[in-house]
Length: 476
Ligand code: ADP
Image (cartoon, rainbow, N blue to C red; front, top):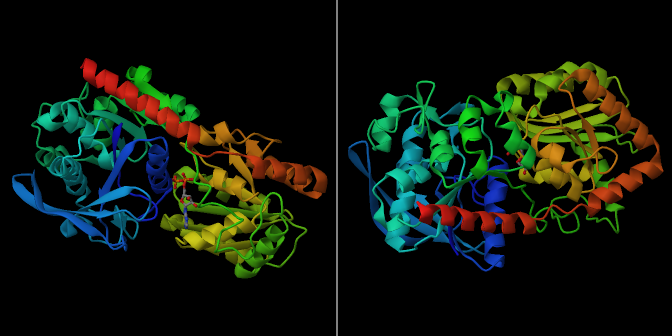
């Protein structure tokens, strides 16, 4: 099958979160299954690889003007990655914004991206059987495939994956409709892209793609309810026959304590002794007392409401009253920068904080911690808990979305249900009890090492769903 992946961030080129991990892993899996794959993304300032020029002087119409771009390419990752090079929109340090605010022209940037993807693919004469789109940044593509005038893509199906329903790309109709350029007819709530008086790019994906997926079975059910659906639960329920949960995997070549070059000592499930060295090194790095008799809780996260940080705040005094240590790496909402700076000052012996985005330090936390904390309010899939398992680090999670589908209390981690401080703190008590019972702890860690969330089965599932999308497209 000819597969085109259109996506806004990809490891190792540019990353803000789990979407980039997924987009970097999937093409390799599809190639392993024998498919012909191209991936296309914007060329941001962050993309440092040497890129080859494929086409110059391509252009698309945008709000009455013409925007030109070049098409670049890299083959260094085992698949062909194509880059839409349009400096006016993408040659910036941030991907979607800077210093905590979105770019003011995101509506234009990603309307342009959708059109540029289709123009580029046609110019290359790569005729995809299916386009795999991800999140709001590529969600206009299914709209163009269904409603736009693109005869070249007459038989091209579209599978749209929701990685996080909360990020929608919602813009004023005055701004967005001229950019989209398909007239006012699509601006209706039923079967269109209107959403509470805004144009909603994500909704274009939900309405017009042939098949929809999200990144865990539980999240697929949750988003059809008012609690998690953000007002889109009706649209999602109406498409429930086409909506599937396909769990994310992780790339075990990248996340491997036996070969990781950025951690203090390499180790594995068979030879775990290096993990204690990683813990001591992490304690030193965070200025925490070097103790092996207290559990070290790590957290690597975007500092966003989704991640359960208000729950952590409410539990903090109870948490730090216990015999434990905590190391955080994160960046995002300024109110959480303040919270963690304050906690580090109040509990210097127990709480270490680094407010940054740092991939190598993230690896040292996965390796050096005993536990990995994800008290998320909601979590479509979550990769942190899967990476933690690979490093023999036990996840402590709230049972929501993909966390509920991957972590089981007493088997490979610790789980609490209700979003409240008392449930969280009693889970922490269970951790402390298990940690002091060395044998039981070792058994849990061994099971964590043995967990296998590789991509194989999920990639096959995507291919089955690509075929289903294609059958639907051809039926019309
Ligand atoms: P989300 O996509 O919602 O941010 P996931 O758990 O799916 O959450 O994926 C998060 C990914 O981003 C993981 O690979 C994690 O290690 C990484 N990450 C998050 N914050 C940071 C940070 N401050 N520094 C380095 N890596 C980070």
